[in-house]
Image (cartoon, rainbow, N blue to C red; front, side):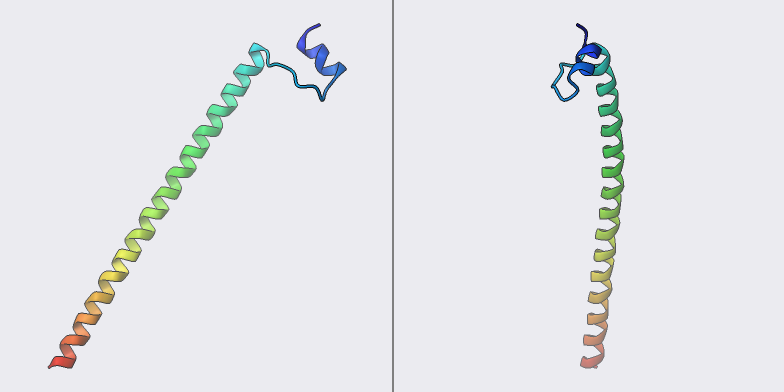
Length: 74
């Protein structure tokens, strides 16, 4: 009895993968990994951009505080 016959007889049964199924699974896993890596890369770029915005905002606040302190001292 081959794997296809076993699947028809007992569809809920756990069946060991044959070589073709392993190749298909490996291909699907590689595609999923590539997708997740691309997604992670985009998220990393967004995080880097957000950190830059926070750093810029902190620099602007420091500059404004210094300007305000200079004006009050004069």
